[in-house]
Each structure stands twice: as C-alpha cells, then as structure tokens.
Length: 241
Image (cartoon, rainbow, N blue to C red; front, side):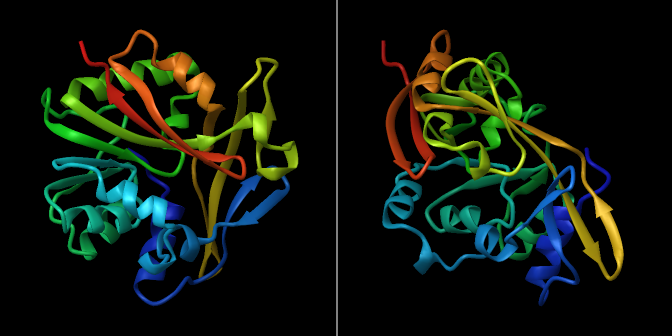
C-alpha cells in the first residue's frame, strides 16, 4: 500500500471543511490544479443524465474500484450492496464518512475477492489505464471476469488518443501505435506549508477500438461506448455462449 497520500489527504480535508493548501497534478515543471471539488464532490444535480442513468443500471452487488471520495459508491449503495476499494487510506476514510458500509484499502491489482462475488464493476477515473500496457489491461480484465458472475457488467473509461491533441492533457506522451498513448504525473499537496508528494502514476490511454482489441481472449466484449470531447465511457459485458 502507499505511504504518501496527498490526494487522499486533500479529499479528506475538503470533506472536513476545505483544502489547507494547493493540490496539483505535476509533470516536471508543469502543474495543473487537482480540481478536488469538481472531480470528487460534484453535486449529483451536476452529473450528466447519461452518467446517472449508466450508474443506476449497474445491478448489485457492485464493486467500485478506485472509489475516490465515495460519491459513486454512496449512490450505488442506495440501490443495493456495494463494496468500495481504493489504494488511498484517505479516500477510504472519506468514503466511509459518507456512510458507505463496506469500504476497504485494497490495490486493484491485488484484489482478494472470491469468484463470482459481484454482478457489476465500476472503474471511474481512467483506473483501467493504471495497468500500464495493453497486455496489463487484458490481464486485469481477466481477473475482473473472475470476480464477476456469468452475467457480469463493467463500466470503464479512458481518454481517446485519436481525439486528443498532445497539449490537452498534462503528462501526455505519444506512442507510435495508432489509438495508444501514455500519461504520467504525480499529485502534490502543499498542506499548511508542508508538501506531500505522491508516487508517479503511469496510465496507458487507448481508443475504444483498441479496447475492443484488448477484450479479445477475455470473457468480455464492448457492448456500448459513450464518447465526448476526447473522453469515453464503455460498458463491457460477458460474452454469451
């Protein structure tokens, strides 16, 4: 598990009344605001209708992987059983503060759930890209298939490199293969004058077409894609035999 937890600490501080300094994404000398409010505390009234409908369609039990502040887990719990996990202890505490009953500090690449434990899985916030490579994504999807039942559904998202300019994202790195790119950055939180620096995060970015390629050899297929301004959400379903 992680030791430095700048993002989790910033989420907790915001939940408790407000940030105590700047929380930023950093890649070298370049920084951008972490947008804690917008990413983790947006009002449900501000959610896009398509997103709210998609969340509401997830049948319990649901696993929320990389739960952040718990805003989605809280919504899902109103509809049935949800288990929320995050590698950040601060994020887990913030999620628990929302009243989410089952929330755990857990690495998404070291999940210890039994087979067929869940009907649905949510990975919001480009979590799937943390698998670093297309081969890593395929391995993760195979593990996700293990812990979801035969009617399993997963909602994932990512940036589409075919619909982005290099300057659109901090930490963007090109790849010679079409539909693939990379992103690296870390979080910093200047809290009460003391800077906490998180580990470097490396994401693989891939287009919806590349996601379809990745699902080959796994039990999943891409059933639906919702795209908007270089970003997309995809619904994965188990292949029916």
